[in-house]
Length: 280
Image 1 (tube, helix red, strand yellow):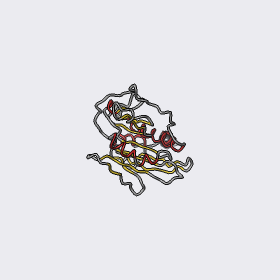
Image 2: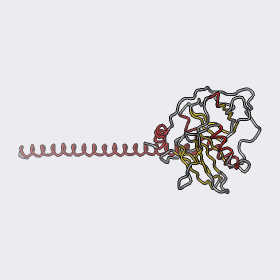
Image 3: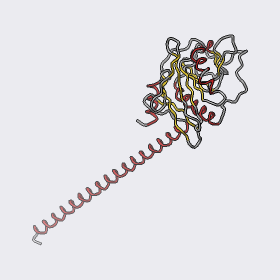
Image 4: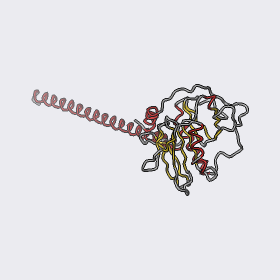
């Protein structure tokens, strides 16, 4: 099984199951602002991290039409109160239609709250991300899981996660020896790798068996490599077929030469016998 087909098999195997939400897709509700004139990313580190991470989870969950991925958009979580909103860097909602795209996400209209939320730490919001937002996301809004990550390589590594337990309490997740965390809600493992060329500590998702979810560039390279391997295999097979055909042709020519030699030898024998019989 080749790499891409193998991944597609695992993707279906590990994809979470969940009920369909009770609401309906809502693009916009009048009176709820959908913009705050703030830039999406605080720094270039955050821009790279958010772009790559959002693209990875979007591509991974693309096979399910009832998973919505939001990127730096407003989530309103209390009908009638425009002050009850948040704007996470990236969030994942299970059970709602992927399309159409929304200007904002309205939990009461969609009948769902985010399954997992990701914030990437910046100097201006780090304290809120570590403290206030844990309560706001998991208790006030009732999201299932919340993660924070420091993408700037020159700063100390920080990757933490919390989940809401069945009783409504908040539990911090325990990292493994490498500092990674497993998301039960998404059925994905998250770890990071240091990208020295871009100075980004990149948070990355993995399947439960450790298979990495590739970036679009990595997948492109994989497809090119697999195409090259397939073409090389086809070339080798064609060369082997040609060698076999050449060998078969040589064997046939050799068999024909032997047959011709045997016929000629038999003719000479008969000719010699005829001469002897005639006393020549």
